[in-house]
Length: 145
Image (cartoon, rainbow, N blue to C red; front, top):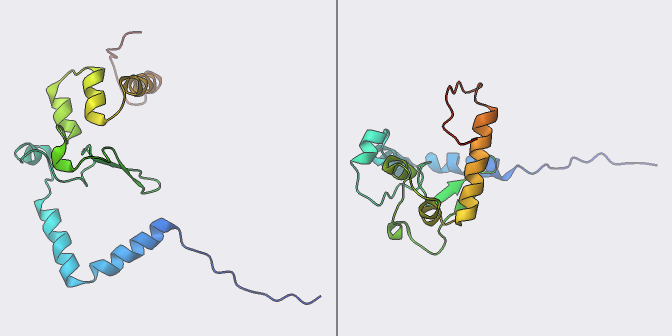
């Protein structure tokens, strides 16, 4: 029986395709100038961020509450699909942290999640800290046991 050797073209993963497209776009001088401009305006340190107007419009910041990017799949999840950035009461997780203690209801309203889901995330984080306390060199855990 005669079999023909054929090469099967392997498709690139989506993330590689997007990276290739971005690299192609960055070769265009106009796009490169826009990227440089947005990098220039974006705050690089927390002190710069504090002086900027609120609501923060830099949704690409990892502390921005408007959207989340999955680092593995590069997929984007909009936390507030029915709202625009300027309609949010809080846009920065660091601003919320600077306020100090807030209730589960307040965090739920800020993150567009239920109080119960916030409690579950909190319990999971506390459990991880307890298990990995020595790994991260945590001396005191201020959690109720």
